[in-house]
Image (tube, rainbow over all chains, first blue to last red; front, top):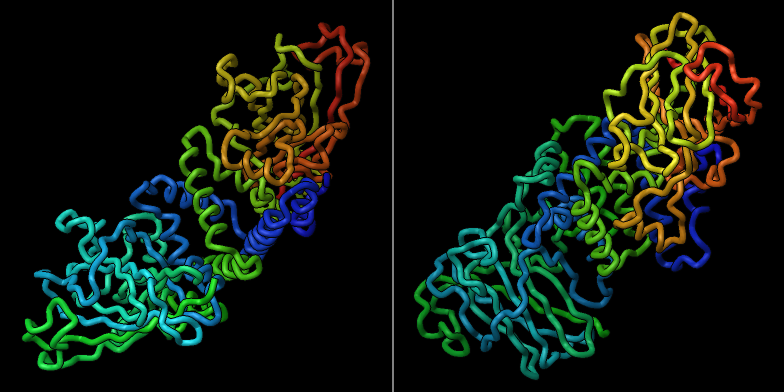
Length: 289
Length: 289
């Protein structure tokens, strides 16, 4: 095409594909180019705005390290990460939600009923539930990888004061599919705002907060792995999670209960609880692989 | 929104804007999010593909330096850079075309009729034309910043063997609006293929070639600056410029002429030419500011 214009540039782009191009790659690149071109045309993007965009991407590249991935954060605050979760969610299982950047592998195995709070302070929370198949039958041998913020709002990987696996635990269900543990109430926190993503949030009048949540990765043989989060229904940021992670089936009531109702057995803290606590019940349904 | 799904995520994104957000920023970000979300939905992008995309951007960031901007190159091969040129082109002037990454400021002023080829070899080309307003009146005092490849296919900024301003020149028109110079015929060349952009070109079966061209930046008081290129009509890559820079009004015939027809005055080489040469006439029309 020796006369590229606004109307034929996308078609010209498509005509460049080699005939042996992988069909899926062709499909993705076609959609990408189409939407990129439409974006530029629809906004009548100026050279100066285009330059601003390029400089933004350069800055994003520059600030990204093995420990901090600003491209992932950008994808998060643009809603792309959550949309990918939603698109790839199963229809008959619990909703998935963002993995986030703070997961570390190798969480230490714990017995059911273990306590993760120790002497960290914060509200005591008792979490329990079942891992189920789509027909509501319990799944035995499922692993549940749990991680969350400490009361100071930081994950252990962000905080030199915490041990590596503080507030990280791995549970394995018995034939009854049950799991249970006690911990501290996770707290709301902000995504990092000292880089290009913070600049976008600031310029568009958005706050950087996420509602508090417990992270779960649940896996079992024969089922699709599930990455998800549980949110308390009284969090002030529930309706405006800056990374769009909230789904209605992941919002649970943190029910306040009297100390005297704490289970007398089955928990590491059984017989030792003299404070009121919060009770959360969260069943997870895994789709078949 | 505590129940974000595929159908409401874009709307949720839009609801996050602060009310004092700059209207143009809001417009651009709205279009960006809309198309980004549509892209993900249309392709049903998987987690693995999303990760591949993020790694691609990280690599692009890593390879980008002050001398090499892989984000610009990515924009170029996706057709975005050319589309921005087209969108912002004036309707009554010569088409604009990509600036490219090889322009350097401070080109040395030359007299009209100067020779840029020197002893570099390659086909001798005589370039002449006029700088005109939309009513075809000559524009005096217009500056024409010219740059091009040496016969080895490299710009001086890419080649340690060349002086900094080799094949770079600045001309200023007299009241007649005329310009003229001799040079070597620019050659076709490839964009850099040793990075992520090269990987895309390779995976989609595309070649990395650009048709040969002379770069122009033309500026005059009271007129819109014009960044453009001139292409010869016999270049093999004219119909598939990998950066989509070709416009029909920028394709000129490089007419072969006998040595005896070389102008006997007005050129640095007048009286010294004993070889056949190529003649290119290229008038530039500037839009009013």
